[in-house]
Image 1: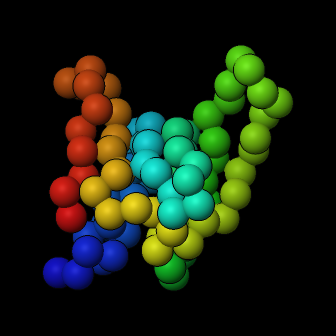
Image 2: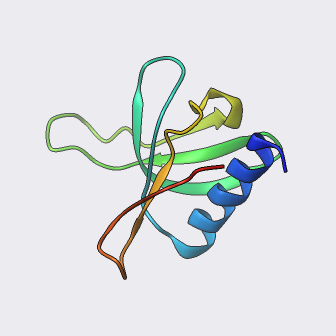
Length: 86
């Protein structure tokens, strides 16, 4: 299975389970929030609110912009971050 396909399946899981997800982007930003939608080669990322900045809202991001090995989800049952290994 290709890395991008495995990452898409990981993101689909996060969408279905409404788990918080975090990853680094190729442009240097770090994302923390939820996956609101997955379609073709992109996701609708819903940024988590920050007490230090205005609500960033949602943004379409290409899956290829996610740095390999940087994706993780917060597992509420385990109460810890679980990395995606692709």
